Image 1 (cartoon, one colour):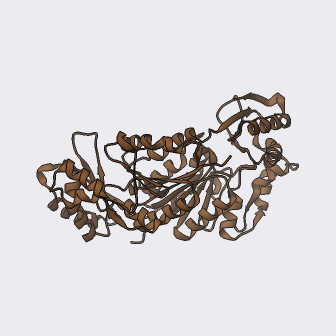
Image 2 (spheres, chains in turn purple, green):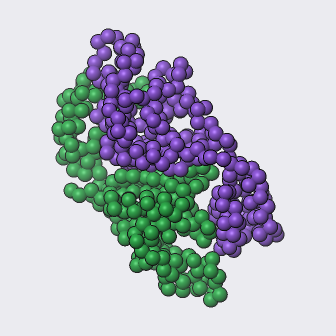
Image 3 (cartoon, helix red, strand yellow):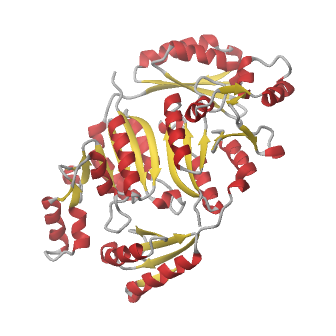
Length: 243
Length: 243
């Protein structure tokens, strides 16, 4: 079962210096998981053209989808459109459709600062359909979303169904054994069930369990097999619960 | 004034699939700003050796400091030590000092799962001094921190003063003008004061202001000059306040 993969590129000095807290990557993590899309990378970078181009280029080549957040307004620090175009080797061109929308809203004398919002990477798709007042720009596999969290969400929601894939299946085992004692069995089960992603997370706060072991795959039967193998390997008297 | 730069590499499938929410990058953003260190990149990647090595290598070459979070336990999905060693072209070796600490704690018959915790990139520094029960591993400019948030914090706090640099100075202007109307003046002031980082953030929720403009630099006089130039360019009747 092929995995659809994704990366998020968050663009904004204000996240890196702490003036704003990222809400968009956090939102998208949950959405992508629910859609069955495997998120493989999140990058947060400043409003610098070359860094945007380099990150978007690398992610666009490595993953099925790239979502950018931020840097799409009219001011000097909004360079995401140019960065995406540079990443994909495309020119920035003025979209006549967007230009008409801007003139429809601001009037025929809309100034250059407003008309700049019609500049897009060449051959960009205007996505999101009639649900949106302003479309999402998609260039190749890169989806350009705004940094303002309310807008980020409404725009992603308008396009999300195109990304839907087979769902993930997951199980979890909670045990009172500690990670050192579990490590050899976990290593063996993980090696024998390479198609299942197995994670081990120590917990120093709950008295109920010491380690949470997670098992995840796109194939439910594979998860069930790995879980059975794992439960055979663990000390059953130390098992807190499975989920 | 030279800027000290940093990157954070967060390692963990559990962040990318949403089972855990990142707390460590969020914590470090505030700490680094307060220390006067310019955070230039955050990357979140899975527990995959080659991806860890590639991200750490790139960040180690580009930035003054790299902080990794996660992947340092005894289980199969803990491959950060190997990844950092690979990034730096070093071998993984067993530290006799850490081995003695482990045997002191678990007894002379401590098993291989426990002794693995003594494996470090060759020539790693054991940092953090006597404040810590277990040191922070530092290899070249890479500081290896655990994923468990309480431990991440206490370990960073034990080493943070070595990173202290000149503080940042910042000011903010809140205006009722909208970003389209501000854009030309902002572009001009930003170009004439390139040593000051100027950001523009629209606000669609408050009725007090429409745009927050931030000015930041390591030189207070430069911030003051850019602020004066900016205030001259803006429509004073639309100014909400400065901060």
